[in-house]
Image 1 (cartoon, helix red, strand yellow):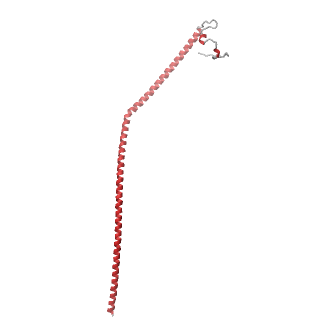
Image 2: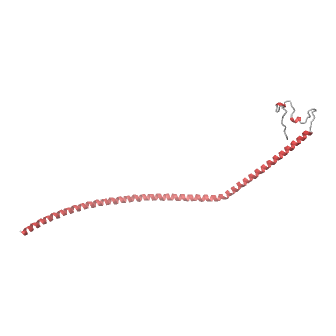
Length: 190
């Protein structure tokens, strides 16, 4: 269908149509007599109909191809999704087992950790008690040693004092004996 542009200089649009005969009425009436002119117009209509039918057929073919392509792509995508879902469903029990296993391991490790914490706390308590007892024992021993050292020092001072007194006595006695001996020797020599 070829459209001819309006080169006549006439106005087109709604203003140019006032008082004119509608397009469908114009095609069937002859300008002079008012009789219908059908053969040329029928051929044009037949040609337009054929063109429209061909266009409609091409459009329908394009729509069918697009629909088939869309259906094929949707089926492919659905098939891939179904395949992935099947894989996931097949792996789900394995994942569930592994999750249960890891959950059990976690609980076991958690329980063991709690037991270790209790043991360490008990050990800390016993260690603190042992250290406290050891410090008390060491303090007692040091006090006893200090008392023993003070007693020994006091005993040593007593012994030293008594030794000094004995030494003084012995010295005094020696001096008396020497003096006595000298007196006797002096008498013997005379």
